Length: 396
Picture 1 (tube, rainbow, N blue to C red):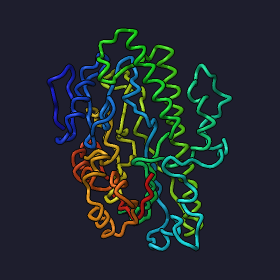
Picture 2: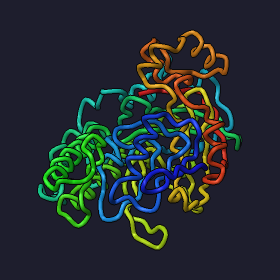
Picture 3: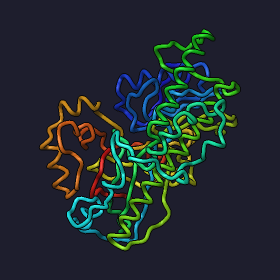
Picture 4: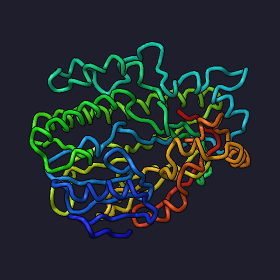
């Protein structure tokens, strides 16, 4: 950890190679009028919208929609199977890539912008809309029907489904996904509202910083927290449904059994107590890591992921990284990475990968930071328990 002490509050960083844009965003947070104690920047950090990905921001009396982000509740889940080995042919059957078995993961779980062709059973949703009022949940009520066809879908970007070989000798399944369009709509609605209100209040926070806030004791602040928490629940329901369908495929093909699922989110705000005071902790691309928490830190589709145990470091507000973190923007990766070199690296490791064209290079291993370096930089935040090497990947 290193410290920057030039701003109103100190900034604690668990990396040395932070890009200029992300560093400036961290400084903007450190000068926010409602910032508490210090700013914590995780080792996978890179520039985001208003707040750096990998930023942990504690605030007194306010919540910042942009410090949560647009994919509210996005997170990881992982599941250990009873399998201790798996053949390439079996993996292909599970993925749905063989003539003998078409009911694989690819046919059951829509990816990218695709949704289910029909609404899913409401039992898969966190809570049904008859429990809501339009005043309390204006965006959720409006988006609920559309969300019924989105639950159990992967989404795009860096979301993935991965089959892995664990250092514990078992085959694992891992999913990275979020709250789909309902989370985006909630985020956009409340950030727009916060900007309008901050302008009305003549907030001292410059508009260009994109750090508009809502007071926790206001109707708008409480409304955001309700809808944000619903999106966190929806994102978990989304991962659960995908995992249940993947389990069905694994059971059909291999007859294996499963342990309990591990789940952890990395885009949310929550009330916690730190340094003797109750504050609103925003984790944007960061995960909870107290000394009782089992977490998940993924690498890229060509590198190791980790099941970890938190260490409860107060300087990070009990947080750690949410992954390896990007070192190249999507467009830069597509423009500069060599597709033959990237695919050869994956094929040399025997990984069934998801790079089909230059457009897919934004998710190539070369676009991401070195996961080993990221893990080394957070030895005081987490302890690796199990390492997981990728065998096959489906990308959003």
